[in-house]
Image (cartoon, rainbow over all chains, first blue to last red; front, side, top):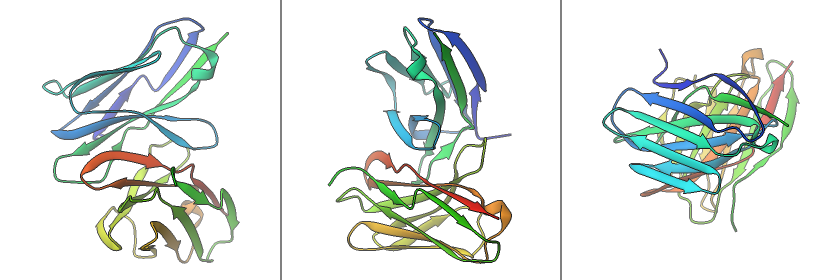
Length: 109
Length: 112
């Protein structure tokens, strides 16, 4: 069992739909990252959270520390949002990131 | 200088050869981590360097080694390449204590 679980693994949506990607982890963390990876590999950091909620444009990330769960929401999805979205956590007293296996999102026009 | 730059972007090597991958971190970032991402998988932690010393290692054999230099650049060296070493190698840097990794675009290594 992976320490960081993401769901769904694959997601297909029509342009304009509201998207939710979920991430669960097993122990206490100091921070959680949401990352975007396009074909070709480069990773872009979208959010870093330790509590509450953050918003940037059409993207919203939330985290519930007690439930060890985070969600990434995309409002009014667009084909350019098509990518792999990865959740990564930093556990207490460590500097390394533990990554989920990612959610592959495809948004069709 | 901003951003993290990795070179080369793509590389093909033969089994048994040695390879050096390079990462130029954001100025001031004293911590660099290297990750291996196999196709269809999430990145796996290889090791981390802090102020030019190894500061944590994942489940990778000793033929994976690294260096970090005072100019915020670093290297990942892999000896005796195996077919399973084919992957995307990512470096990520940050200033320790101020959380927030910046990732490079990766080097895609193919071992044939």
